[in-house]
Image 1 (cartoon, helix red, strand yellow):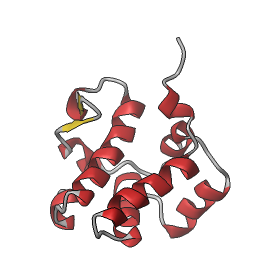
Image 2: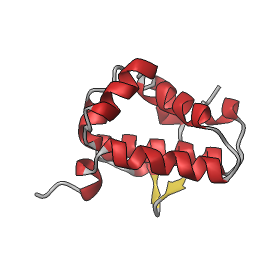
Image 3: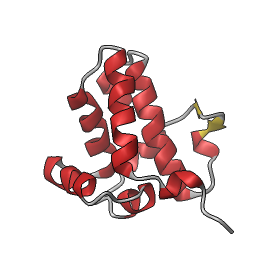
Length: 116
């Protein structure tokens, strides 16, 4: 079975889209990075390495230091799918990040986005 296209997209090509979406709504690059760090366990240095290495989305999530255990608290619809019902773990993780950036762009408070 062929992999979904999103798995093979370069993280370095998707990342600027996350930034643009947030910044268009008055949010910051730092907030987007905080979301990524929270969800994946990457830090500033390791995130930059992933961008420099131009890894695909699958590799980005497979190499993530630690998916946040509270990620399972992320609920709702993104790209027409309920994130909590997505069976494929990798696709669910990708959609978690999409959902978090979407919540940021919609003006949700960081404490709520990070499920604190």
